[in-house]
Image (tube, rainbow, N blue to C red):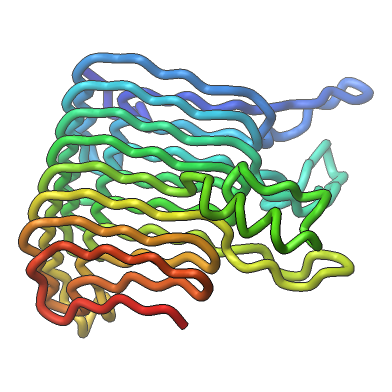
Length: 280
């Protein structure tokens, strides 16, 4: 159980502070693996997350039973650096913009959020593996998983297209296996986004495959308030996209949007309204 002053039922953050000439800096995200293994989590005070795990770089592993929260049920973010300045007294030092590097693995029971999203997992360079029971998101996306590149990518050799192609198809990228999902936002959102502005190369498309297995997925968002909200949205630049689900209902968007730019191998097994599978 939590108190009203707690930000989350379980809160694990890798942070760094620097002391210089007797002055202490603000806390910034730091490198470090995070491993959480707990039973049932209850965090029902206003805004409380069920489980919160954040770092700059390093793997995040979360195992838990049933989670009940007011805010986001599970939040796992490998943030990288550059989002905030390092501040010591009156000095503010900009940090280089570097994506987070690390894998996220989440294995939990049922997740119920009264006023937030269900499960949120974000990394820069890394894979995401989510396994959960039923997920209910009272105000947000049911399951959100975003990465830029899977860890099978050799960043020192991005010009070798053949090796990157093989890595994209061999790497997991994003894997989601959940029960029923109810949300006001998109039911399941899985995106391998790529990297913009790589020196000497330019934009690198998202490299990595996506595999989604779910029960019934229901998105009940109001399009006049929230904009389009799909049942399942799965997008990568280079890699396979596989989606398998039961009944899919999206009041404010498409049932299933499964898209890859190059080398698609799609298997969509469901009964949604307005499902699409595209290679662009």
